[in-house]
Image (cartoon, rainbow, N blue to C red):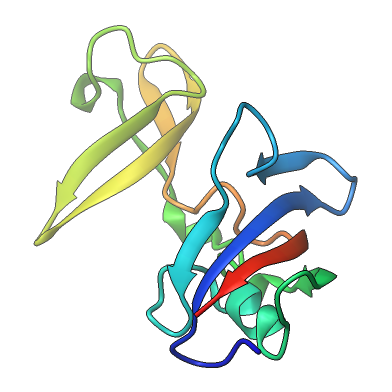
Length: 139
């Protein structure tokens, strides 16, 4: 039975409320996800959802934004001069910038003649996640 500190192998499919799949271990010959519960490798809602499960068990876990990638924060959307961006920057591109002691990734949301709009929110921030999980192994 899975508990804090268990080493787990699981197949999963992560979906949004509209049933669109954002990630899965069930395609292209991917291996099951392997992790240790409680080490913070995965979002809290996923880890909390599998506590008590055992090998062979399947479950659908509903993960609210606060237990997933957090709420969407408008203050993490910024407009910066286009001259601060690399040549040829395009909408949908991911950029990175040094912000003090850390490197922050930004999604380019809009590009115009003078400015670009960037968003530092995780792409899944503010979204309810649904994970179909099958436990393959527990140590």
